[in-house]
Image 1 (cartoon, rainbow, N blue to C red):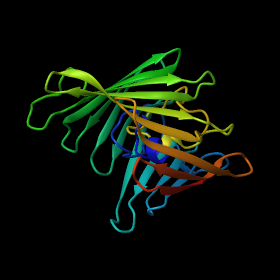
Image 2 (image 1 turned 180 degrees about the vertical axis):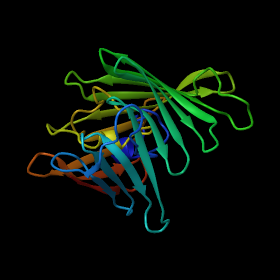
Image 3 (image 1 turned 30 degrees about the horizontal axis):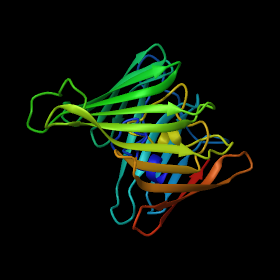
Length: 272
């Protein structure tokens, strides 16, 4: 979505660094299945109204093989992300830009994602905490330019609260204040008015890619409100959808309004 999903805020912030990617290759212990394009309820393309897009290819076992981000025509180019699996778990993602993501699990839950630059140096990592299988906290650690390593204290933290139906209700964002090395609340995002249709796109609108056993949003939110640390409304985003005969979202219109500013609209199309 524009405010929450498209900007990568929610993890969605699951990591908080705007939408980067989406993609993967299959290596490791299992044989590499052949590639198939999405059919049925498998999403194959997200098309944004600036002309940019994401293309998803699948292995024959329906796991993701590659995600390719295509820039808008003004700035042509693309980046492919190839997924590597061990069994059914995504363990590594390698991009054609040289960036690599490595995944660590506790049981079946991803508890750490490490990000490496083209030269092989770790530039960031994220730790994930769960309660009863639901993601409840993300902590991000980032390398500071000109320093030899990554600080042991997080640079950001996101905390998640859910509605009783399992959909995300609120995400609170905190950032480290380097002046006193304390975490300070920066923003709160509240989501409501969910529809009763399956959310088919959220997996492809996070950065970094995070395969959750329980998605943070099972359905599609209709309203998203951003508050600053003092509780003042900074932005309100209203979402409306159209659906195909299977109930999958085909289009999503986001109408955003900030105090004192004109409304803006963004239309995203989904293909299966």
